[in-house]
Image 1 (cartoon, helix red, strand yellow):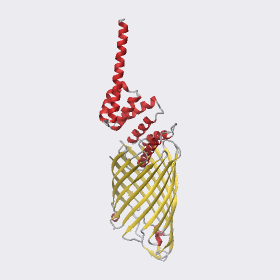
Image 2 (spheres, rainbow, N blue to C red; image 1 turned 45 degrees about the vertical axis):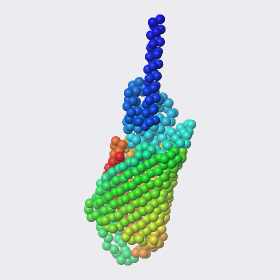
Image 3 (spheres, rainbow, N blue to C red; image 1 turned 60 degrees about the vertical axis):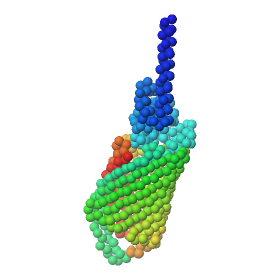
Image 4 (spheres, rainbow, N blue to C red; image 1 turned 135 degrees about the vertical axis):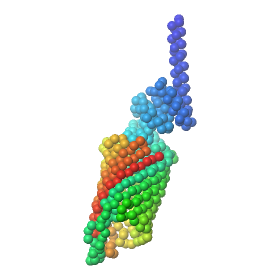
Length: 435
C-alpha cells in the first residue's frame, strides 16, 4: 500500500513539474508577444537545462536570443528545432535570418533557397519574406550597407588607399589636330590617392508585398602628387520602392549624384532606374535593368546629355561557393552637341567564389564598344572606342560589421582618335565599418 502511495505521489510530482515547466514556456512566449525580449531571453536561459530539445521552447528561446543579439544561442536553438522536424519552414527561416545577421551570407542564402524549393510550397506571404532577405543579401554582397532586419537604419564609414598608373587617362600616342598639326601631350604620370567614405541606408518592409529604401552617401578623394587639381568630392542621395512576389522582386530607385573637382569641373546626374530579378530555380536567376538619366556638366554644357541604359544579367550558382554571371548591356546618349551623341553596347561577365563564410573573391570582365554619331570637330573623324575592363577583388568580413578588401582594376581603352587611347591600372586597399 505504501509503495502504491509512493508511486502515485511520484506521478503527481512529475505532473506538477511538467505543468510548471509548461507554464514557464507559455510565460516565455507571452514575453515575446509583449516584445520584452531581454526578459524572455533571461527566462529562457533559466529553462534551458530542462527544456532544451522541446521544439516549442527552442523556437521561442531562439527568437528571444535573435532579438537580443545572442546569435550563437539562436543558432543552436533553431538547429535543435530542425533536428526535431527538418521540414519545418519557420525555424529554417529564422536560422537564415540569424546567419544573415552574423554576416554569413552564403549559408543564409542556402537556407532561403531551400525554403523556396520546399514542398508543399510556402504561402505567398512567406515567399515574399524570403525574397526580401534575398534582396538584402544581394545588396550586401554588392558592398552596400543594408538593414539586418525588417526596418533598421545602417551607417558606415570607409577609407581607401590606392595607386593609379594614369589618373587623367593620358595617351602615349602621337596626336594630330585636324589630322595635320601635332599636339604636345603631357607625359603619363602615376599617383597615389586616398578616399574617405560615409553613408547611411535604411531598408523598410512595409507589408508582405512591398517595402522601401532610402540612403545618402558622401566621399572625398585626394591625390598625393601632381594631380591635386583632380581632388574631388561626391554627394549622393537614393531612394525608392521594392515590390515583392513569391519568386521575383522589382526595385525602383531614384538617384541624385554630384561630383565636384578642384579644377572647377562638376557633374550632376539625376537617374530613374528599374531592376527586376526573377528566380528560375535554386541555381538560375536573371536580372533585367534599365535607367534613364540626365547628365549636367559644368562649366561647359556642350556635353550635357540624356542617356538610356538597359541590359540583362543571367546568373548561375554552381554550388554554395561559386557563382557565374554574364549578360549584354546597351546604351544611348543624346547630348547638346551632336559630336557627343553616342551609342554603346557590350558584354559584362564575371564570377564570385566564397572561400569561407567570411571571405570572397570577385572577378569581373567587361567589353564595351562606343560609336559616336557625328565627326569630332577637332579631328574631322567619327570617334569609335573599344574598352576592355577587368577587376579582381578579395574581401574579408570580420565580426559582422568590419569589411576589408584588396582590389585590382585594369582598363584598356582603344579609340579611332589617338587622344583617347590609354591604359590604366589601379591597386587599392579599403576598410569599412558598419553600425
